[in-house]
Length: 171
Image (cartoon, rainbow, N blue to C red):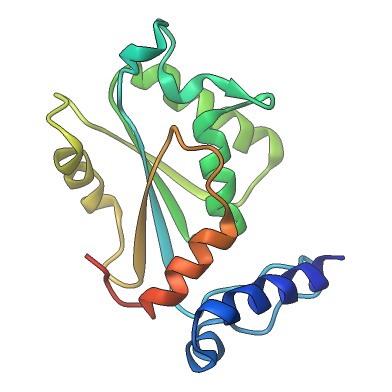
């Protein structure tokens, strides 16, 4: 089950990343959960402030549903699967609705994920949005910045990116 999945994830990553890096970054998989934990803290910023004008809907883009869950909820769930220390969601358009919509599933599931919201007002672009998240982020570890409207991002992809970063900043 879970332990086999963790080993296969590590094995696939090992084909693309030198073994020394894999050994340094991946600790022993937790057999009970099948999760592989990074040896450095990881925080995730989810960009969820956009209007989504091409959606032709009054509903914020990140709250549109796919497979019964909001688009951004898929991204948050992926952050949880990589054992992110915290997730900071940047809201703007429809902020109250987005914050309520993304907080409810965590309350229902009893998830231990530290979820914070910061607002981008006014909306002055992507760089400005990330600046709003900086005060909510720790100074150590690595921060991944993900789009809230990309629900199919896989934890395996993020783990490979983190392994490649070797715990350092890439940008």
